[in-house]
Image 1 (cartoon, rainbow, N blue to C red):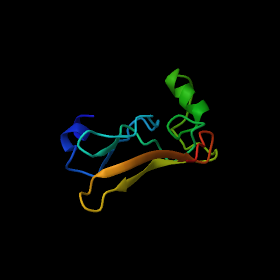
Image 2 (image 1 turned 120 degrees about the vertical axis):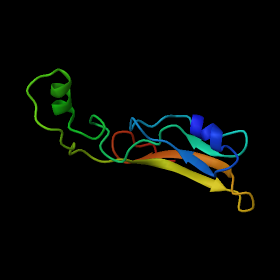
Image 3 (image 1 turned 60 degrees about the vertical axis):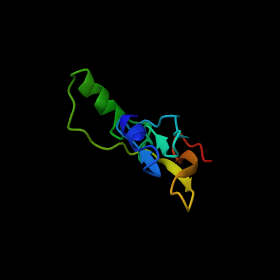
Length: 107
């Protein structure tokens, strides 16, 4: 949020990702910058941030586990689409999306 507000009006879009869990806060800030806190990840959401969920749970519980390895389920692609005013370079519309996998909600 700090970076989004700092760049509001000076950037077309600010997209964050950290937890790999998409937030539902895509919007246009007051001075015209498109913003979303976390666009989500590209990978299997039936996992722990893309890693095998059963092994991740074992690691969390300090049970016998092996090094993290990717989940093998169906992948999703997550992101945002932004329409930009050609003259100002600022956002006029923003839409988040998830396509495929267990969170599939195409727009």
